[in-house]
Amino acid sequence: MDSEWGSRRAELGHPEPYRLDYVEIGNEDWLAGYPDGWNSYREYRFIMFYDAISKAYPDIQVIGSAASSDPGGIDPITLELNNVTDTITYPDDVLGDYHPYREPDELIYEFDRFDNDYGHIIGEVAATHVNNGTRWDGGLYDFPWWIGSVGEAASLIGYERNSDRIPATFYAPVLRNMNRWQWAITLIQFAADPALTTRSTSWYIWSLFAHHPISETLPVVGSYGPVWYGAGKDEGRDGALVWKGACYNTTDGADEPVTVRFDGVKRGTKASLTILTNPGGDPYAYNDPLEGNNIVASNTQIITADKKGAFHFSMPELSVAVLDTDVEVDCPGGKPGGHGGPPKYGGKKGGKKHGKHGKGKGKKD
Image (cartoon, rainbow, N blue to C red; front, side, top):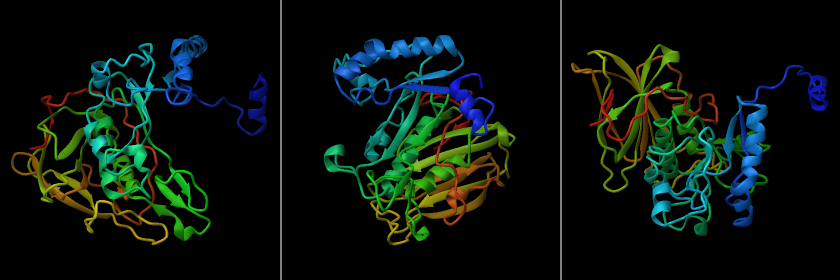
């Protein structure tokens, strides 16, 4: 309260300093003013701010304005193969910031994007373009749509399975005013007429995942595709075991059989299974504020582990599922018409890091 702005804060009713844990230096500097602005950022502007902040506030987590793959916008291995040299190298205690606005197929391709990379936040992510390989040349889609939302689910699982290096993930943008807007793909749409307030297809998936948190990721065995999955436990709910999956088979339409087995689970153990689907079958369908429709269907059931402690179920084409041994957990994201969950989905710092084929406690056959 001794400073000018501290005094102003106290006058406005908050005498105690606000807690500040993260500071990002810049925003998409690899994009704005490239190449001159980017070159000055990585050559001296970033380090000047980093040195000053770290010296004055050593406990604050500094975030850089780009990812390890920027300005190329592709994975680091491809950058190396293509001899891209104008990426940035951060100090070891700095997080990058990754902003993937992608086609659904690209989000699936990037499922293991951070398996062997340094720490990042996913500061902005959404499926924004249909699968045609042109991305920005093709323009944004009208609203979040079903196959795009399922692609987002796979990417969220990929981030959460790397939660020891991905401390937070954010959908962006969150709100779209239907009377005046610049960006079509948003989590929620609204207007002065409350009847136009619409939870997008992506909202249901993000809310479902957020209501089944994982505090520690578990290693898994098995292969990926067409089901992309991760597993963990939540110490905040007495060690509840959680499996999350996104079924992205877009070829033959067949259901995918899934087996989930956790170490220590005995015969007769109960688990809630919530599966989100689009019964209409159109992968490009969306929730339209002007129509007042909801194309997302949710089914929650209690299933029982077999004599080997395994849970068995099937996932329809283009579906998202969460299995949770805490059968009392609230899951409004899977209940169209229920109350809303937070529009942020952040993986907590993980306990165990695993690779694609690590031996461990979660299994999908």
